[in-house]
Length: 174
Image 1 (cartoon, helix red, strand yellow):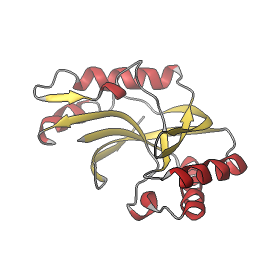
Image 2: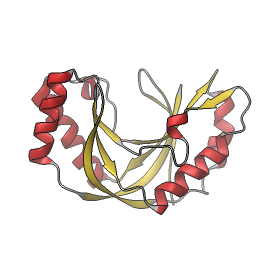
Image 3: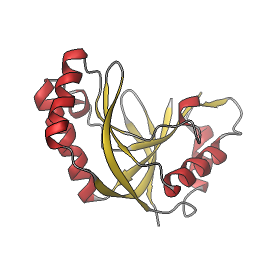
Image 4: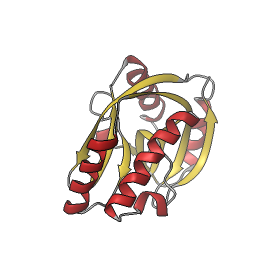
């Protein structure tokens, strides 16, 4: 599986990494930090036999997608084991989702996850993963005490392998 994700400016990375670190410290679950998962927002999840079939399309998006601002307004849970921060689905994110989907949807022998298609996608940044029930409750408690809405700037897009996370290619957005 491969992910197309966006990455943030330094200020946003510090905020999100702080939340990741707080959850890891409070829960004892260091999945995110131990696996060096950077703060990111996944735009598309694609099943493909190999990355080669995705590279040309990904490269063709360079210069066509723009940076933009999003508002993180809440935290949530993907039961049973994920804590995330969620932005408002604004026009910028909707256009980004549609452009990425349209670019990759017709590649033979690939499948885009139904959870990452335009209008059936929950934009989120994972802050804690593989949390058991008690850890998820603790994560929610610490986020109640620490989370505040903020504006984020999307500045990069990348193609990555998963398990473990490994960047294949990244470039700056204009």
